Length: 452
View: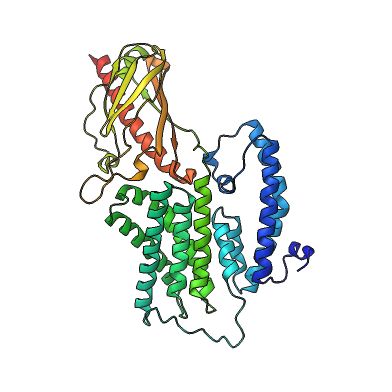
């Protein structure tokens, strides 16, 4: 294959040329990006290619924008080359051309490359099918159960391994494992058998459910974390199922070969994630309410708020930690405030004491963010230790017309669980509810004080 052929969308490409050109172009692109990053005084890891599609993980400055504009311009020819190669390979493997969209999905595109590198060429016109694997049951139901059990068990083991040995809660676990397990379940289930798309997706989701159930039953992860992870897992398992369905629909495939390729690549990617020690981004949550009292009355209540009634909010009945009361030792900058949660106290040295306008504090120590539900004793899941970190917070009071006060609470935090954009939806939602529990209590106490 000549170099000018990679610019053409028409035609086909075999596995060998696809692998050679794919690896060569990626290596060239990666090293050009590294040189550009070095010239900009920054480091560059393979994981940056996933982070670019996770806006929540970045807080852009003017120099960042210039760097990423240059990076985008440098990427344009490689985007065209990659698209052309992927379309040629899909055509060669008799797969739908629209599957090229997977080339543009972060992290998934690398697994997709591994799959296309293992997929055989278009089957011959006689359509002879390979012999059914002797290790799989002959019945459709038996084959489905085998597919679910095998892939669900492997996914559970790999998840536990990555968390226990590497301490990683990243793209490999929440993107890679659901996608690969869903894909592999369909490949096994559809081994020399006609299946429907709905059956393929059902088997993939069942595999994910088995993985989650096993993690819960062996008391490795609690139900709250699994429930939070399940939506993104469902989406990615279904995506893997769609790819697997179109792959087995018209051809016999080597189950071991096609399933092993993305699995091995996933393990390599997880190691790359582990080597990247990039700190998680600083995020913030801001919540405001109006209080029918002046700033001085509100300030009195917020510095050390009294005991809050038991929550009626369903969220706090799931094991999520929630505030109960606060105490303060001293006044002014340097005073120590303790905001007590159901799992323990936040120790908060005061950094700004601008009475009655602003109270700001750092976080010196914090308790676990939740109590995980599991069998037997309380579960000490890995993600409860240091992955969510509250760094600082503040209360701001602003005078409104008619003597009312706008009370605003802000928390700055990091969450070392990726993709940041997905998990930020959960952490922001939870922090808003925690803010509202405190702010509404302060509001009620201040307004009662005014009434008296």
